[in-house]
Length: 433
Image 1 (cartoon, rainbow, N blue to C red):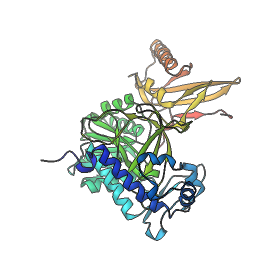
Image 2: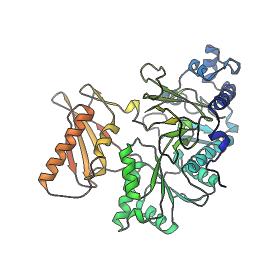
Image 3: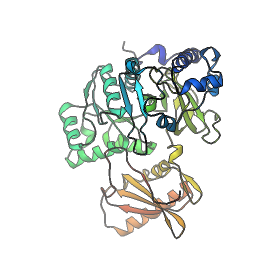
Image 4: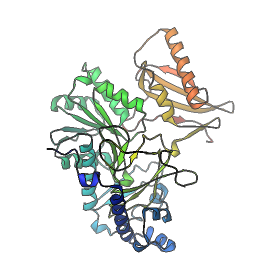
């Protein structure tokens, strides 16, 4: 009988035993990090040693780590081991300053591949699948992270890379691709590319999509599933933690299991940095437990989520993260109101008359903040009455959700500029915000 678990011992480990494993791995990680010029003096100042760790709660004694810390120590200032043991690095683009650099030993890469292979197995992928990857290969972790994991799974892998939708259409059609890894906005664009070729994406061989890297609403996920006639599973990863493979939904699709043998999970109030009760939204803070080259302690991800209470019917005991509601640094303050882009997406996706692309523009007009929401129509129409009524209904529902009245503009399909990477959802033109 084929197991539904990649590693049943780890995935179904009783909570007490799992927490004991975390304590053991945290001690080992502290020992490794004592070789880091960044962490060593901090640990000494706070009297943190492997022997001082008695419980998971001791993590609250540790200092936080931020993206600015990674940038200020660029390129190798947080490394815990000598570079002759490092076999690969990944980094961010660094468009707003120094990039963030993450280092890996061979063991780090092996554990990363195993974690993502476990994630793929969790959603039902097997060595009989053909997995097509639309992420870029290079410094971005989504390319090689998925590639090595799919190979670890034993699946036939199509390393198609980013962009060139017509090529993706051909590969899916010719190779019989059964699983697709892509960001949510590209899943929509690729479906449109199929339709332009006269092919209904629901009639392809694709039956599973792994989506992530962009905050997206449940309504957006449902729309993707309807477009493709396939299941779309939310996957979470970030370069600082390794890349894809940090957390993923199981086939129950009721929250992302975060692999706690690799991470200590905290949900904190982003302002007070104090823990919030289970089920309450806060900022996700992660500590790595299974890394050699560059372990990170209490890394502030800025992602907003919560721990879902209760057990999952799938039998996995690792905590489940709720769908991300955006990032603490993505919050817009308009007319004194805190607004997240995903709140607007949630409303727009309720209208079947709209396509998936939208753009939020904020600007100062006569000393007042004004928000304009442009949304693409799914089908062209010159029925003025229909457009007027649709615009009024969208405006009403948005006001009910975000408590201010935006200007709603309905535009033709393809009018909103598209990017090869993550979709740009907000254009803030204010000079002082």
